[in-house]
Image 1 (cartoon, rainbow, N blue to C red):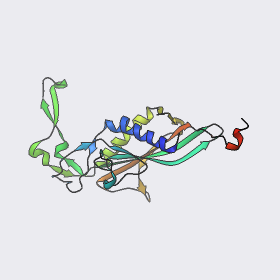
Image 2: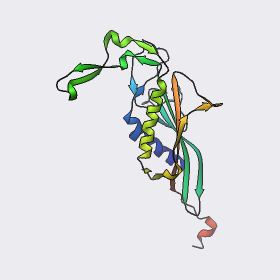
Image 3: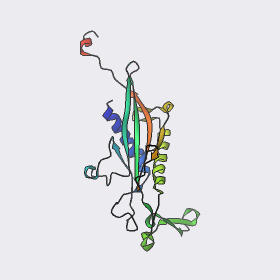
Length: 209
């Protein structure tokens, strides 16, 4: 299995099994206050790099929210025919604060469990906005979901998750300080995958076999 195939398989797994389970705010840097029309989307999954706005696939509305699969280091054990890949997932999301349109309001509903249903705030009440630094919660909720799926998965399309190597995670830092790129929030998760590697017999030896 090639390196490109391995990365593509992890991207596909994240897109189908993880990103489909969560929605996060779609960024709008021109309207991020009370005028922001709240819209939630599933995060996109990218290989190696997060593309700029002018290089996005047609089906992806924005580079963020997203998870990017990066190969940081690999090794082949030729005697055991095993390959290990150390991967880092870079998670990104956007949140400027609490918008009225994302708040659920309770309504009495005899048909609902507990007699109460919840709906998004609409009308003038949806135009309220409180700026805050709580976007890190979205970032870590996203990370919790990825961690849960990794920890409950043994294989990703033929690649074994090396549980004995552990899974590491945390926020991005610079000189010991956590990144502060408000209203963008970032964190990372790293783990190891293992797959078989086929050692090609040199041509000069094939006539001896």
